[in-house]
Image (cartoon, rainbow, N blue to C red; front, side):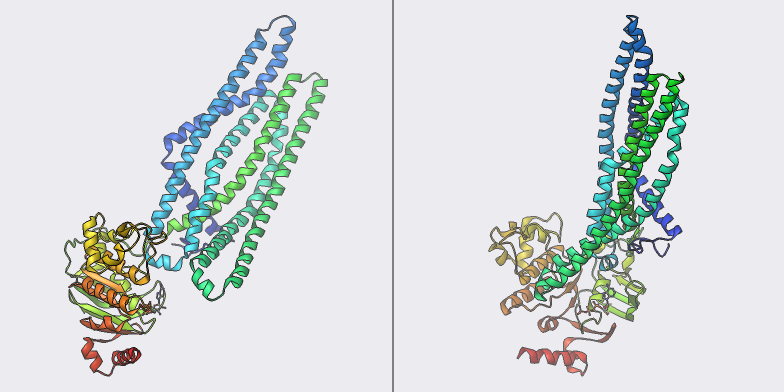
Length: 602
Ligand SMILES: Nc1ncnc2c1ncn2[C@@H]1O[C@H](COP(=O)(O)OP(=O)(O)OP(=O)(O)O)[C@@H](O)[C@H]1O
């Protein structure tokens, strides 16, 4: 893969020729794949656009007929010819109108179906990507891909493409009709194709850069907004409002400048097209007028020619408008297709080894780990954890405790060596089995929007309310939940449903208890709870641990004491390994940490 594959080149504006080609091909392929599911509808739409435009193109021809053939016969009292042309005109008008209406309905259905597919694809794909991707790609960017980029595409698909195709077909047909009426005038009109082509070329080259930049700057605007609002507590705590204002104004100003640049480009394109169109009409009129004087051209034909020439240039202006949205959407498609090109780094095995029941024995052998292409974080180590053992992992900040936990949850794969659960290498276990047997309770104890019961039930989809209550009782969460305004049905995002951090932890314990995994990983919250809450959480924790294998990133002395074994991690290495009593008795790091803890308690 190119070094620019996926989202790696997202912020580049000036791409090399080959890179531009690659990115463009990727974008069009995505659009083609989306359109591919709509083939029958597309075929119908094509028929509709061709027939309705044929009917529209007939108008000037019928007028020429009426003037040069129908009207002279009226003088002789014969109204039939005028009647026929008039009737044909009405028929053409009805056909053009109704088919155009049908065409618009069809294109709307196609574009909405394509957009829905793309929206779902982007969501599912982003969700499927490994944690490694999400830890590097900011949420602001993801939001901008899913919102402003898809919105730009929606604008094109909703109207742009149908108008673009319809206008294109209409221009070609009208041009043919001009040639049919008078090929010399046809040539005059055709000559304008050259400056128009040059004009579009000029616009395309410049607007491509401006629109690409627009996507990048728009993502930064959204990113800056999202970061400020999601970190609003820190913003207030550090009085960052002023500096955030300045930073946001700068980015929003860049976005404004970019929009002005794109409007300026369009401001050259559209008037130039109008000018060329008017000159062409004048040329056809002047030359046709002289030829009428010479008796070479009928008045009706000239009227029809003027009508047709005028109509050729009307959609050209529309085309310019939609070309602009096409350029903008292409830039968005570049970004979205880049995101979709990203592949998960942690992949599910094609042929997983079954792991129906797990005891929960873990074993690292010759394991080495580093994030992405970065430095080695965990140097080569072996670690065997028998089923049912409770391990407390302690160590300084940045030592590698969470990294160890993330490896067991398979958020990341080892760089080399193996990790097995009950003797089965972790990368050969199906995602479903892994999800069932290994559960991680994270520090933030995240609650999803919904009721308390729904949040607990996440541990076991389809769990009955009795099971949910049983789990809550087991970890000591039942009392506070029943005291909430609507008990288990309280919405955690609504007023009154807001729970404290200790209560959040208890809910997440209940969730994990219900899941009943063989291996439990627990990143203990660092925030200190008040003594009664701490006790409640501790009791809940003890029930939760039961006799499963547990790895706890411990921040509290009380937690370390309930562990069978303590691992001290330092600088990516396991430097001490033993029972709490053994380690306290020795003169190592844990003994020192323990002393400090004890002193802090007094
Ligand atoms: N996603 C990541 N990408 C690159 N490096 C990372 C990533 N996450 C952690 N690291 C690095 O890995 C090392 C170990 O981090 P880890 O989060 O495992 O430490 P920790 O012991 O859990 O610390 P803490 O107690 O502060 O949570 C650190 O040097 C950190 O900078």
